[in-house]
Image 1: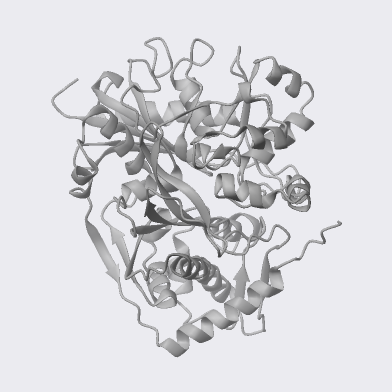
Image 2: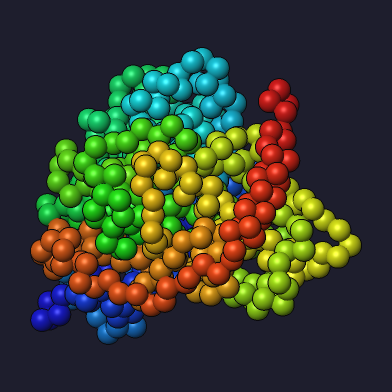
Length: 508
């Protein structure tokens, strides 16, 4: 390896896969990205082809290395961040996926989740995992696969079928796959399954029994930053080069690290397919009374971690994608800023994009999307603006719940993700919150957080304090709305949410 200390980060998201190579100052040296297919077999079902995701991962990683003129041997380590609750099952001998991956947005497990709630198990699950019972999480998805894919349960019980979230799938393939690949997950991803005990940081036997899941198909739970490494890329593998794979974190926890929110009370909001607001609560899990999730923020040592409160919003950027792909109202996401800026407001229209139900703070699996307040006055531009406003109003709901749970009042919100390039969206977020919104110089903080996990493991960075030196402000957005304007807009939003709630009949 040369004198530079470089880390590769694979950011495997809901719509595509990116590889970024970072230097010690947290600057991007190279980046490559490819989208993958979204598969919708029936209403409410969302799938990915895990083999396609692996192939794209190899391609973007090779492309980033080539762009920077590097070989795998030039890397100090490799970190992974991923869409968290998407469930993959695969053949332990061949590495072939045994079904399409079920994506976190998928709602097919509604009946199983309702049965757990009706059976009175939600308080136990909440106490053990910090999570609510919802279609969002991967444990019920795995239970559905075991019951629905012919022969899968028998193969799982015989150790022939493996389960993992996307991080496990990629790490297993990167470190050799059928030839000795490491079957591991990190503590942040494990905390999103409904199967891990938040206090012991291990798989919970009672929950495995409740969901009828064979323990032998589950990965080993490891720290997010692991000096031992999960494994190395084999010289004869698709990447070559003996790279130590030693960092992993779910995308939202990685973004929290990328924003250097390592102290209790520090928070960030990531604007991607969904929106995810996380607040570091320190070394003690805080139980939410207002519909937030208690989750692992980061695990830097075995058996030890910091925790966070999370407000998960299912559909934000995906609503913009829907405007583009389903309605044809826009050609690309970047146009939304220009189009929405042609009108002063949304013309009285509100869009509640509850395509997968409502996540935090409502947790209504039966909600569905609604556009309300329509008149002949409303134009395409108003609908585009209402879509951006929906992102901001959902974030306000979550932030208010967070402040009420913790007694903390956030003076500013750090933001990241692809949508923060939209200056109008960020200004609207400051206006709707009545709080400063701070955009950092490095916007791909999810990938940066994965790089930090790998770099801490390999000594590129000695401590989290080293990481803070890399963080800088690109722009601060100051709220400009009056209190009356803010209150009136939010009141309209709350009325719109009520129209969307409970749309699907429970017995349907």
